[in-house]
Length: 564
Image (tube, rainbow, N blue to C red; front, side, top):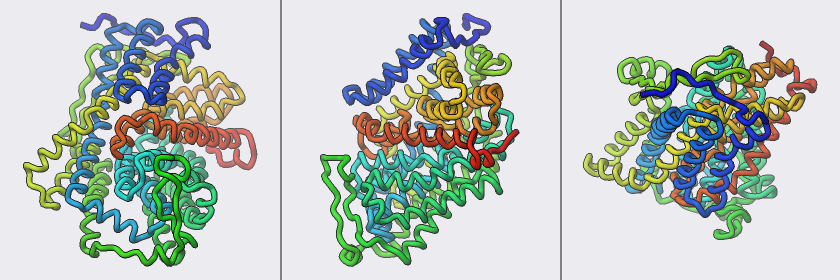
């Protein structure tokens, strides 16, 4: 039985904001520290951090142990569905294509567009990844692009880290605009206006990130050698991102911009190629175990031949085309409206639903926190991926029995990753219901004139904690609105900044790192991935913060701001 009627969250249990903030940060510091050390496996680090978060919530923030237990269990369920469900089925499809040899043919087809590894990164990690972010989100793009890059010969570290860096600028519009919808739900702002404001922030980074991505991989000089192609890829994406978000709607921004970017780059490569072709997939100077890159001149690279026929190449792409189409359909409101009334199961968590009260100053008026596990098993993106995998498997002439055994093998391969993801989500959900994350948020909110900068970093922190821009927006969107209005800033600006800043936290959240390590077979090396992307995440988040500061105070950037 539930031992309390309601429980009010406490945001300053020590009567000292500094001490309370330090206590609230302990689970995050411990988690990142253990992962970065490389001495503790990711699933063990996740479980230990969850235990520490439980102790912080109960013994320091006064959360009843019964509520903390229920919140942790709720988080575990959310970790498996929908996130773990997506990863399991994406890797299942990938393993099927590898077993049948179709993935090797796909590798040849990408090389047929360009043998230059830098251009392959633009096509796969940035543009193709943005499409999957828009259609599915929740780890799908990193899983798919990481697997493809491994197939193209990139090292596990390169495939993981570069996929994470590339999967930033599209995140705010991911999963058919789910982060925008979440932000609108807690702020009361029109989602079209929020989408338009974010579309006046992120296009700057849609241009920057591809340059950044190639510079990380090939160095500054290697980046300069293909700057026209990078500008075409990022520039076309940014223009489409701005145009669709401001003049169409926020739901199809990523899908539309990704298709424009891929089409523009492929068309551009029909008329242009770099003076030197970068043929090695090795990270330049960042992975000593592989060594430095080598280059050959264009004519020699062009002489390379492919063994696959046109029909074989087409077949190799069919599973991924099927996946793209099904995931796009699965994410539409039309599809969800059809299947959810029949196949959804809403389960209010006993003893947790509407028991915990979120109180001022985090919200304007106290209100209970809902805890409803929506088991939308048919409309989950992962279910669409499973259908695509089964259909593709039958097309590849796998027997039903082999599909079953291959699926069981995939579960076994991913067992530790699924444990890790579940524990990560449990930690995030527990800190949310305990009010621990709100304590961290209030620390950022107390920065006065610098709030546009630190408020942006609050969105970054939210994604780093929860692994989701949607969750970060739901978590801190209301706080952003209240604080900005108190400081005389545009609430729309700061609510949007929460989402725009949050996208840079996507590359360091533990769930994304585990997804990347799983997709690339880089098990047990999550610490290397975290160290690889950590400073890139911080620097890019700070740059977003600088842009928001300019939009808050400096003309002509202030003219870009939409006011309520």
